[in-house]
Amino acid sequence: MDNRPIGVFDSGLGGLTTVKQLMSVMPNEDIVYFGDTGRVPYGNRSRETIIRYTRDDINFLLKHNIKMIIAACGTASSVALPYINDVGVRIIGVLEPACQAAVNRTRNGKIGVIGTAGTIKSDKYAQIISEIDPAAKVYSAACPMFVPIVENGYANTEVARIVARDYLTGLKNEGVDTLILGCTHYPLLEGVISDIMGDGVELISSGREAAESARKLMADEGLLTGSALEGRRQFFVSDSTESFAQLGGLFLGSEIELSVHQTMI
Ligand code: DGL
Image 1 (cartoon, protein in one colour):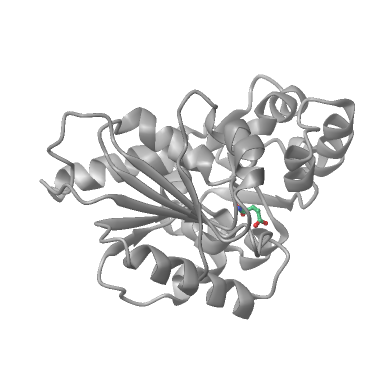
Image 2 (tube, protein in one colour):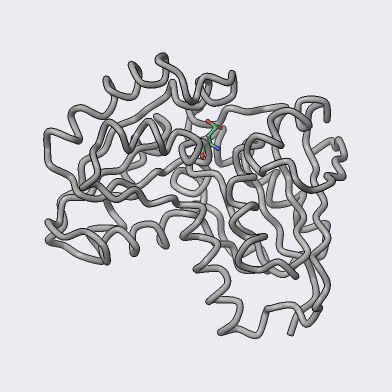
């Protein structure tokens, strides 16, 4: 039993989609969230910069007596985590659980992966999938416009549909039957993506899989809280807290009171 909080970080507020899943599978856990809103986006930055920012995010969380860290950011998970050495607590990213789920659920062995430019360039999803199942075929597509489309409120519009058709037609033509949504923002585009890919294609949300996998891991390692109360959630951002109210609600569902702090890192 371990009553310390779980640390979660992301390049910005998109990681709240993972927090939402964590709150659903482990409602009693305390969470400390850090969103690097002053330096978002990470998705189109160089590997060196993403690694440096990710180290800063981790160091911030380590000051909060956390028991483990979840990198909610698809880009940080794929580009930076392979270069981060032991920091004293366990760090899990969003890739492995989604890859395992995709391998388990595909029927024809053709798996699609979408993410930011950095995530797709790293090729990490394809590497992990081929380690789990060398026979699986992976088809990837970078979807850099999806993040601004979501953040500017265009998720359920014709604009999103046109851009998504352009990004996804290649994957659809390859016949993938399983598609990993490898970025924090993509769950908000699930409807549009599913319309284009068709009913036969199963969408896998990396945040949802990561939350479930974190719960299992914590249960196995005796890291679950002993508290029966609803968990306390603290949110920190590196830019002004104003946009948190609007965007935070979008990603998290606005049903809870948020306590948000601005911080320097
Ligand atoms: N959080 C990022 C990810 O999941 C998307 C936003 C960004 O590019 O920083 O890859």
